[in-house]
Amino acid sequence: MEQIRVRFAPSPTGYLHIGGARTALFNWFFARKNNGRLILRIEDTDIERLKEDSIDQILDSLKWLGINWDEGPEKGGHFGPYYQSQRQDFYKAAAENLLQSGKAYYCFCSEEELEMERERQRQEGKLFRYNSKCRNLSVEEVQARLAQGLKPVIRIKLSDGRQIIVKDIIRGMVSFNFDQFDDFVIMKSNGLPAYNFACVVDDHAMQISHVIRAEEHLSNTPKQQYLFEALDYEIPEFAHLSMILAPDRSKLSKRHGATSVSEFRDMGCLPEALVNYLTLLGWSPGEGHDEIMTPEQTIQSFSLDRVSRTAAVYDIQKLIWLNGQYITATELEKLAVHALPFLIQESIVSELEAGQNRDYILAVIDAVRERVRTLQELAEACRYFFQDITGYDEKGKEKYFRQENVVDLLSQGKEYLAAVEDFTVENTEKAYRELMAELNIKGAQIIHPTRLALTGRTMSPGLFDVMALLGKKRCMERLEKAIGFIKTYNIENEKA
RNA sequence: GGCCCGGUGGUCAAGCGGUCAAGACACGGCCCUUUCAAGGCUGUAACACGGGUUCGAUUCCCGUCCGGGUCACCA
Image 1 (cartoon, chains in turn red, brown):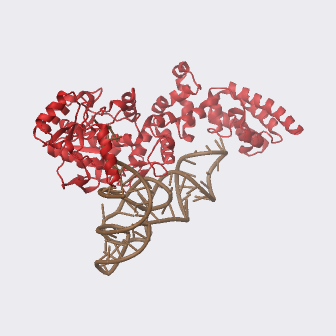
Image 2 (cartoon, chains in turn green, blue):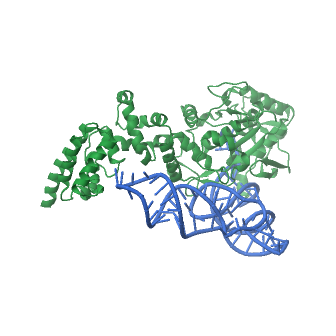
Image 3 (cartoon, chains in turn orange, blue):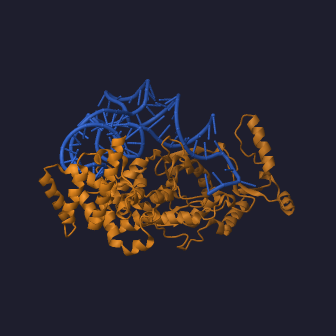
């Protein structure tokens, strides 16, 4: 096999799922690692289940994750079209070929007939298998029914008692016995190909060397392999990735919270973090390697034989932790690009401000980033740098605003700060330290109430970073406001 | 139910006949500290079960149990 060619073949019936994303990722890693090509093919042969903007959504998610394909939608390529709905000629030709050589046949059985047969077999306690009734229709009979306008399906003729051995890179040799299969449909009565058939025809036409896909397809593989043989195509290598399961080990679904790439994005995940997390779910860099990896690093060390065979339960906690790591480590400008939409959406900054007040925004983000784990949290942590404080943390009030001399403390703090000309981190800290020495108190005694006064919260970046960022004017105002608040607050408390 | 794949701490996951059975997340403790994070140190916690094979099995084989997948004119 000269050139490595892999494909990711989503069906546009919804958004991109994390399972699908991981499959796409592994294909991409494998292609890049081996100087191969990643083909994106859209499997849109089920007209009933198509969803309008699903393709765009999937493409967006893929792009957001940083996965770039070499051939496919928006890219083109020599093996197109890349939408199965536009590849009718390929399927027709292949089906015709099978019909000619007697390996496939027209079947006119109606849904109703099939249903009756299914019921009959069920009565006998058997599993339904098509009875191959139309296998031996004569040419005349076929012509006659076609002439009547009947729309047949085309079925592949399966040879009995055969055994097929699928060679899987991840699972080894897997053998299947054919008596469990029946003459399955390769062309539907609406003229469109059935999945297994379209897949084989396209994988061959697109010269796919390795089929890397989810484990749910393993049971389909013998059928496909049979078709490859019937069509006299070379059989590609297979690698079936284990599934990603929900925390209760059941199949992942909406009721398990976020499952689509776009949901993780909206939650405030950084694409690199999601990619890193998904990579670790089913693949490991091996002993002694850091788990935090850029896609480039993963590509360098990626190989299919380190892919796990065990189904993985996804654990959002680790993703969130990883995300926090990325938020602190990502280059500031780049982080801001991802964070800005959250600030805007939360009405913390306006779009206009986002453009004009860039340096300040960057400085604020830099100050809060270390203690947040999602971009949503980051936006929330930025709020009081842009908006007035509307209230004070409940527990904080009890703890810090009820100290007996707190009004005095804050007033003096305010005075000392008032004397600071250049309102920097160093100078504000110096002023406060002097006051502490003067009063002979511990830092915490004045720092906590000040923090609450300035931010409304009990947690924030270092207090003097907050001061410098807020600026003298706002610090003065907030301190004043807090002093006023505390007075009435304590009076009320005494009454109570 | 038939067939297929799988089963190492709560989760991810090293391991590939001989290890005190790594590491990460989560959890507990301690340190640091101006809160919260981060960071450092540290602790609790695992080879599903039963038979073999072997001097020796987490590792190889068989069975049981459990989980998942698949059995469509869905992909």
